[in-house]
Amino acid sequence: MHHHVFVVLWSVSARLHEVSVQWQLGSCSLDNCDTAPTGKIKMIGHRVVPSSVRHTLLHSERIPPTVKSPVSHAWLDNGRLLQLHEYRSPSALLLWRSQWCRSAPVIVSGCINHLDSSLWHPNSFLAEFGRCTAELVDCGNSVVLLGYPMWEFWSGFECIGARLRDRFGRTRILKLKDWPPGDDFADLLPSRFADVMRALPFPEYTHRSGSLNLASCLPEHFVRPDLGPKMYVAYGAALTPNVGSTNLHLDMSDAVNVMTYVGIPTDDIGRRHEIGEIFIVYL
Image (cartoon, helix red, strand yellow):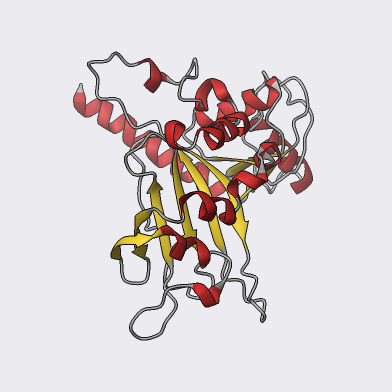
């Protein structure tokens, strides 16, 4: 019996390989589309159907039939990555959910339009927390600088000349990771917490008290994940492509990243753009 099953599976595998070689599908990248047809879409090879027709059919497969109204969006990376240009509509939620169920990332544009920009400017943090100390990470060599005043970090965020340098005179690429380290973000930064909560897309899933955020529903005797948010702040490394402020890693849970500010140094006369970025990591 087991031998028979193995032979059948091997035959199916061989046949699938033959089909994949014979029939080749192109990728898709459309900015907008209408309601998708609800019927099944057959696999069609590019040698039979014109590319324009194949392009439309493949893209329609990616829109679930429950999406009844057009949603402003785009497909990036040859149709692998969804970018939503709107997110406050039921159809946008359904389209996002269809990707999330596949464990696929989604880019949501426009969140910054719902933020109070004055709260996220480096000068705002400099004024409020400049006298506090923090651990800074030198991304060039992974050295942790202990007990540095935060004003030294924030002063150099948009001024290359004010940035700390190493013993060789090279500008340090610094990051302030997962701040605040111990305090609850909502307690230490209440106005910013409320601001970013208003801007989060799909609050049923992304708010830490969201009705569909299962982590918030775990009983007390479970070890709950840290639902954040945490701030991730780093100088840009565009001029040093061999240095990154974040190593390649795998998160323990799903996360929402909200870009709240991007700064270009005022003394960047050559417009080389050593950019600094602030974003919120919300687990």
